Image (cartoon, rainbow, N blue to C red; front, side):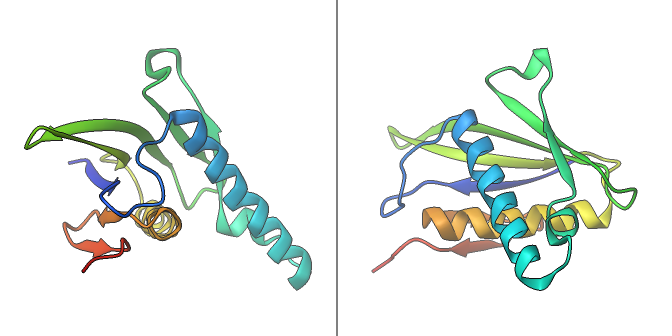
Amino acid sequence: MAQSAYIKFVEGSAVSSLTLDELKAQLEHYREQLTLTGKQLSWEYDEAGFPYEIQTKPEGEGKWFYLKATSPRYKYIVAGVGSETSDETQRHYVQFVLPEDATHGDKAKGNEFCKYLAKLWKAELHLFNGRTMYFNPRK
């Protein structure tokens, strides 16, 4: 059964919504940061820290894309954006999905990406295991 993690933008978040292109750009920025860290360590850290290529399919255009693994220890992760309405309030979110044949490595990397992005955006994170982490300022 596929598992999903959600980064929900709530009151106090750094951004209120996100497009698919902005999500791709943020993941590319994450990869660039890993490359710079690798240069400092004299190690190809970006390949170990982000073992994926961003790929799109025509049926997912504008809705989702997937991260296809470049290492045999991983397979892929699907990422997308959306919104939901609750109590007449529209909340936007980013969703990461682990397909049924995803590896434990994919789940670990998915958690790593979600935590990084949720902390950056000061958002509410609902992890694959159902737990919630709050990075948004709360009173």
